[in-house]
Length: 83
Image (cartoon, rainbow, N blue to C red; front, side, top):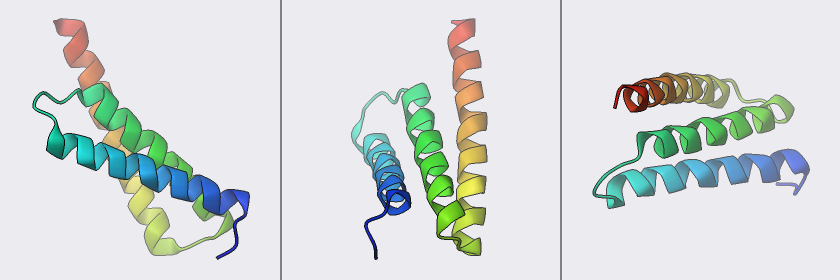
């Protein structure tokens, strides 16, 4: 692996997604905005990395992951607006 910008961005994105996963398993009261935002930004960073170092399976996974996180984020904001 080369330490180019695309790989560094991808690794940072993966780290954000791992932080989100750990957070979801360790917290008693999950902040859905934070959780989905971490996942969305992490997936977007991985997508940016995959544009440079393309892998079809990973690209599809990250697009789906980002889409789910986006819907989750919208839902979390809607829930916050109601309360």
